[in-house]
Length: 357
Image (cartoon, rainbow, N blue to C red; front, side, top):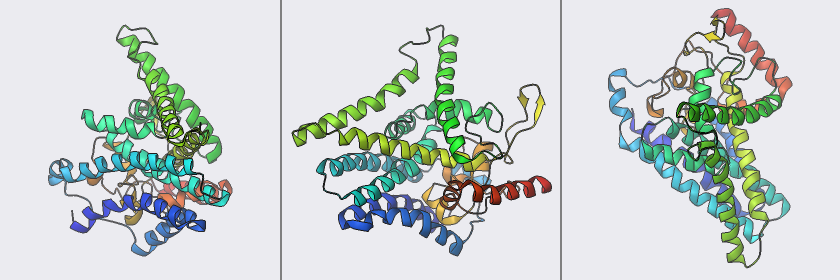
């Protein structure tokens, strides 16, 4: 992998820096991060183009173990935690106008949800206890810790079937998908934990049931933030829990927008009643735009990720025969917010791909 591509994975750190800069510059600068993500990155994607480079399979085991790539992810964990505390400090200072607060609140989850959950997703697929711990810490900051259970033991098993809440159906608009996926993913995580408890011969609500803790820990973290900044301010700050939960909802909504994009209309063949063909690179939309892939740790090479779930982000491959999105995730997220335009573009794209596959 070229040195420029290795350096490129630090691009993600630009986003929190822009949020901080926007706050201190004030005014409309608080919307600068939004403009950068949803306007400038898609423009850069078009100007720079796609990335055809794949890591040679012979060196995949070597590059997958390079400490350099893990340190970037570890570094993000500490940056995000500091960023959340800084966000609480900003909100507790009450120094923003309503317009500035709107820009700040819309920008903040681009860090905690847009990139933070992406990093949590990557770390959650690792085998090491430290990586998995870091994954849970990041998910805690957006009240979405159940994703750790449902994504790994649910979504990756049931992708492209009616059993998967994170697979969007053809003709289903994003808002209906959001409600179904948020609700059913949470309920399915409980179901998976109940099954795990049963296999271990434990009661459903055993202290070893992770969903009990995953449901409580974000609330306890929010309480800790509220008490800490209230004590520093000398008064009870209702703004802290309001800020924490709003940015959490917006943050995990970005994840659900990505889920919506990644699997829209793609289904696995049912080879027997409730038995489906093996997951392969044809069951996820692929996007190979170089710039947005830097910011998202190559999450857009999603087809390869589902075929090889344990493959590290730096080794993910572009798969030409996979269905290809017309643009990177930032542009596609915007498109998904406007269902008529989404259906016009993606239903045609889906039909064309199915006709050629």
